[in-house]
Length: 568
Ligand code: AMP
Figure 1 (cartoon, rainbow, N blue to C red):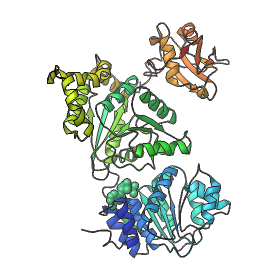
Figure 2: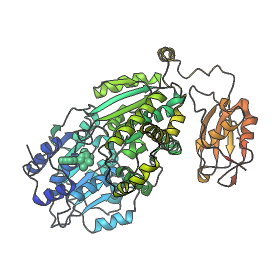
Figure 3: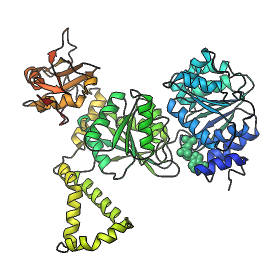
Figure 4: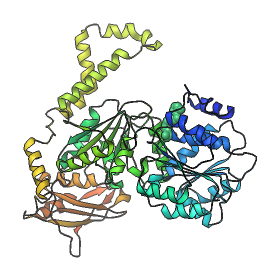
């Protein structure tokens, strides 16, 4: 079997990777490291994310760099700042025992001055996002005229994100005689274009099955009505005790809402999206990596650079608009030989998209039933019982105090003791799931949905209805801590509030707009009267100007028993 030594990696780097804990090269490393070290050729490497590609190009790149000169010799381009930070951190770790090597991470959203200072020191390897690097080139702060290696990492993503122009501008500054290495999870027309433009007779290396979902990932979907999406999510999470998951949402707002709801409901969950500051994002990612955070709710872009190996689940709260993103999402689990599950929560009318994804990833999804409250309680109980049997008793204090405790519990039978322990642990859980309804779509509804899909009648169920939405204005906004669930909770608190349909909610910095069922205007106004949020008195008015009236759509945000306003 190949080892890093037989691949030609030098002693300093061997020490570096040994310190990280790499023992055997991954398939991509076995294939690509000798090629980069031995051959002066351009290369297209098609591989899934999580296969070890950073070390595949990073190790030979570092080895081929001359530390004696401070000239920039290698340029690694990444689509996102997270990936950029991750790659530069990995390279720095590999090069821990290589003296005199400077590696700079150049990405947007961080101090430009600091990056300029770093560049002035002279860095042999630059890892950059195209936008920021291009800015610095335009300011005359970067010299890449002597670059011998240009690496496109996740090239498909850079193109998806519209970096074509920046790439053109950056590569125009590099010498023609260099090696260009391109890494991508897919071979698209755009990738072929890039290869045609910037590479000469590139070798092609394919690792694993192209465009295929990672081998160790099971794909599952659950059918729900839109209003049950969140309760279904909770059941899926509850039915996987000890899971370590990323939940993908479509928008930043949805990401924040789902994370807020989960944490209000007692889950260890936080959001990761582009509205957070770089420092906040770093903090969340660090917590997640260290596993002090169990569930990360993220947008596709924000999660791109996150390097986490042992996710148990990837949950698609909504399917991505672009199917290619499904591959990226699901590829985050089932890594490094471990098993993973990629879950999609969908409405009946989205089933055709599952079929599209199956074609693309060449794998079948299995349709799962949303577990009942009883199923979940059972699963949790068995999980606790199992973890009790495997818990080691290695605490001196337990031994010391045992006789006293045993005497206290002498009257309680073993059976009673077990029952008491379980009731104590799970009381809230059992209460929550007592009489929990079946969230699965009934066969009749399913038939209706597929009939509607065929006849193009989706989302028109209310079009013939008599009621409309009115738009309200509130004098409180994000700065005051206003959240959509607060608004919905207040409306639900009104007499008969559960029947009031809520439409679009726009929360700005200091004010908000809310659309709600016009038949209940007095109830809605009353619900907010005399309320405060963070000490500020709320005032609600009907929004002036011609309100954009529309009919509520099927499944629009409705009832929720979330946080209410405080009544003054
Ligand atoms: P990458 O595809 O470069 O993002 O790597 C995916 C994950 O695999 C990272 O967490 C790496 O630290 C890890 N990894 C890469 N190469 C090896 C190796 N040879 N042995 C063990 N883990 C590795």
